[in-house]
Structures are given as C-alpha cells and as structure tokens.
Image (cartoon, rainbow, N blue to C red; front, top):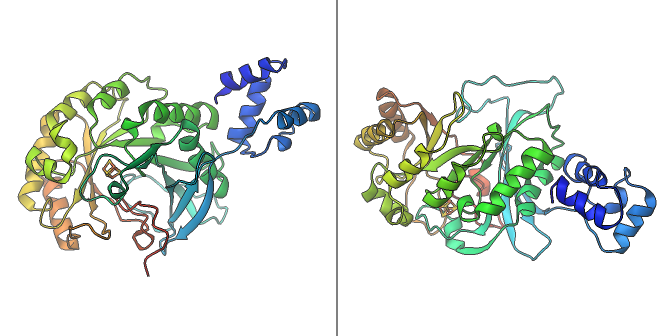
Length: 366
Ligand code: SF4
C-alpha cells in the first residue's frame, strides 16, 4: 500500500489520515516488520491494529548463496504461499566492475565497507512464460505473478540486510530477475511507484529489461519521467531469423515492431536505451553478426548502447559459452562501428546467480 491507501485504512479506523504517512515511513524507510514496533503510533493503536489482524511485513530471505566474487543470491519467499523467487545483490567495490556503469567514479565513503555501489537484481514473476531458449528460468514456466508488494518487498528486504542508507549509498535496481516485467505490468509499475515515492529510490537508477513485449513498451512510453525507469531491450540476435530461434516470442513481436514501440518513449537528457545481447557460442557471436548488430542499432536512430553478456551455462541448455577471445573480437567489432558497447562481467556464476541462471537452484555448484 502507498501513503494514500494507508491513510484510508487509518481513516477507516477513525484515526487521522496523516497516520498513514507514519505507517509508510515505518514500513518503507525504517523497514519495520511488525506493527508492535511502530513506535510513532500510540500504543493503544498498535494493540488495536494487531488485535484486528493488521500486519506489516515483506518477503523474507529463506536461503542465501554467496559467490566468491561477493555476489549474494537470495531465495525469497512471500507470505501468500511457499513459492520462492530469486533476488541478487551485486556489490561492486574495490575491483570497480566495468560494464553498464563503466566510467562512473566509485564513491568511497571511508566507512571501510566492502562496496561503494551496488546493484540489486529483482524478480517480477515466479518463473516465466517467455521461453527464451538460453534461459534457465524459462524451464520453470510461469507459476504466478508477484504482487507489487512482493516486488518492492524484495528490494526493501535486501536494503535492510545490507544496511543501505537511502540518499547516501549508491544502489541501482535492475528488473532483470525471474520473469518478464511487462507481462506483469500493473504490479511491476505499482512496485516502481512504491520504490520511488515511499522508499525514496530514483527511477534513473532503475532499469527494466523486456524481451520485447510491444503492448507493455507502449504503456511504458506513457509513464511520466518522474517515475519511469530506464529501458533495456533483450535483443540477443542480429536479425529476426536468429532471434526467432533463440527467443520464440520474436515471431509475435519482431525487432522492427519493438523498435517502433521504443521510439515512442520520451527519453530524458543523456538517457540511452540499452540493447542486451547474450553471446551464444557459434550462434550469436560471429564477427559478421557484430556488424549486423551495429547496423541494426544505428538504423533505430535511438541513443543507444549495447551490453554484451557471454552466455552463462545452465544444466540442460544446449548452448556453449563463447571463448574470451571471441567475446573480445565481437566487442571490438561493434565498437569499431561506432556503437557504444559494454561487456557485462558475469556475477555469481558459481552460485547460479548470473544472467539467465535464475531457477530457484537450491544448491550452489560444487
Ligand atoms: S530471459 Fe527473461 S524473459 Fe526470457 S525466459 Fe528468461 S526470465 Fe523470461
């Protein structure tokens, strides 16, 4: 619930509506998880809320996997059922990961903490219906949508675990975990509103990635700039033929239809659209395909950049990871064509936390 809805609950109980703000502060800023601890409310009101069955809370971490690179993968469970999703914490500290945020300065605060900035990868659905051939989450199929509270709640839970101070620490959100956010559009955008308005995160530090759900992109284009995250398109192929093979959803919404929809998004000053590109050995990593991708990106006329990701292996998926040499040749070929290109270093591969590896795997790889 947002402030207004919490205010209505309070009014319904015969309390002043402004108490809604106190409850929102407690849930989203102080990260309190039980009504009895909201000390800004009078004791009598807390007792009454508890007696009447009102609860505050959020999804909880039920299992943690820690990678050698500092990445943490959480299995997160809501309160509605036993299903879990995955949320990933990627600290970027001393090693200063190059990639999506390459060129930014690390903002050391002298606190001795291990990270200067960090990224949280957030899930939007349990499983996914999209069926990208390179993705482990696809193997689950769609089990259910997450509610707005479950999406925003993952973030608040991780902020709390990592003792993140809003307004001081630099934390990015990427909606690139399990699920296709634009197939759970209303809950996804409601979660974004909660995260911006109640938690206090900037939408300019959030990126949503879509496999190219055109009606979702069209709705997204209508969202006001104060609330709209940045947009990433999961491209993964140089043309429709290859894309339809690795992402069957392309048969429904081919590249040109996606690009047309993206053109309607009113980008902020200096904002760029990201094209995510998974390099599959022998399938999408050929140098001539790099030139094709460059032409494709230029043809869009959009301020854009390409994020390359060498495919992360998963059991039962018949692709290979390209060699480092092949990745480098591809990256250079794109760069030589004048396309801004970044290589995303895989994070947490050893614990199945990397891109395309989220499948509620309950064991880290040995
Ligand atoms: S890559 Fe994303 S959209 Fe495609 S199947 Fe995996 S989770 Fe779904």
